[in-house]
Length: 368
Image 1 (cartoon, rainbow, N blue to C red):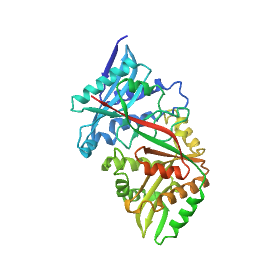
Image 2 (cartoon, rainbow, N blue to C red; image 1 turned 30 degrees about the vertical axis):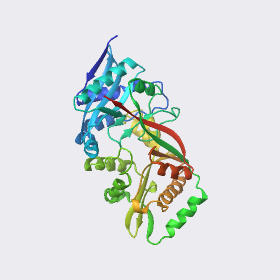
Image 3 (cartoon, rainbow, N blue to C red; image 1 turned 90 degrees about the horizontal axis):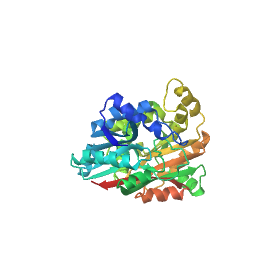
Image 4 (tube, helix red, strand yellow; image 1 turned 120 degrees about the horizontal axis):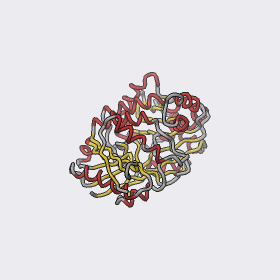
């Protein structure tokens, strides 16, 4: 049976066909959490990436059956920041069909080489602060909010298509235990003159976000693959966070009224989204709202401290406050992710406070 690769348009009809293929892949994977498919369609068609890049969606068919999908794209913001012409892939899904996977990657690589790219990096859906990485372990656990999940055989498919490891990203798990040294550091920080660790004001969230934007940009500037947010990307992120953030789990550290650090954890809405089974209508929204009350896990998603204030205990104090508030809300633990393997300073801090590394997500590169 012949393999055929189809290049799709950005029309709603084509993007829905592209997105819905994943339903076919995960029929026998109980830990898969279906996304809200309509939201994925909107993100691909009209999300902020469309302002900073170009993309091509591809489907591979074996006769008339879709057996693989792939996005290839160029991120103009990344290429301008790093002064290169890097190609990327993302949104990869496939049945266990190596011939089809080789064919769809070959088509994607052709599209990229026609635009001057000499290598392809991924998976990134679409940018470094969107969903990234291939899960290579812990397949017996549900994915945490905004993290990927995939069948174990994807590693073989991608490696056999010629890709090699570029870098790993880790997820850590923290229970609600607060070591004594954390309590001592927290007390020392809070005794300092002018230091306040306060909850984010949800009613004034847009202004709060603008106040800490420079902290994020500085704190993450040296992180692997960092690309500063465009205004459109930042506003999209804030809009998404605003809908799901709980002020009891989001903090800003100030010195004499000036923000110098922040930390945001999110309730793991994936546990509720799973009940919606990919759709908010007609009853998915009701199931989602009912399940949200039962959630016992959070994800510590974003943390940043201005460089001159690092290693002074502010990170520890914000984690301490997150645990205290989380326990009061009935939470039993937190996923801390994603931490790139080159960020050994952060990994050391997490391990010191009792975090255990429990998931690995891998980015791959291939010269083309």
